[in-house]
Length: 83
Ligand SMILES: [Zn+2]
Image 1 (cartoon, rainbow, N blue to C red):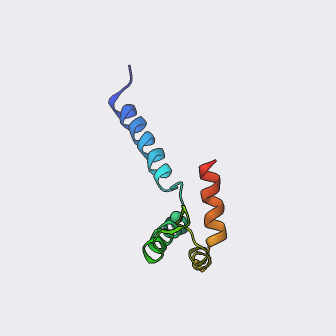
Image 2 (cartoon, rainbow, N blue to C red; image 1 turned 45 degrees about the vertical axis):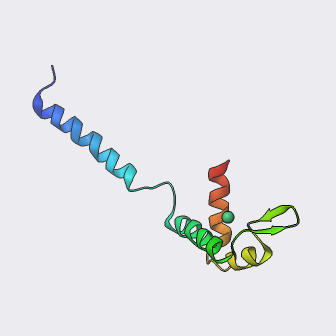
């Protein structure tokens, strides 16, 4: 039989480790910012038709996207997540 005090201690220990997990979110802030930046560029550069294909990521889109500070690193993180 587990006493109320040690039960309370166990629950506290459980929620402490849950809190620590929450302090370590899986996706870094700059990656979230990059995704938002990318989506905003879609507003600025709408999808256009080129012959019979649709172009969402035009060369102009891609060039402007690279202006994001941590573009290369953010892409790397996303590529790893998608794997
Ligand atoms: Zn896109």
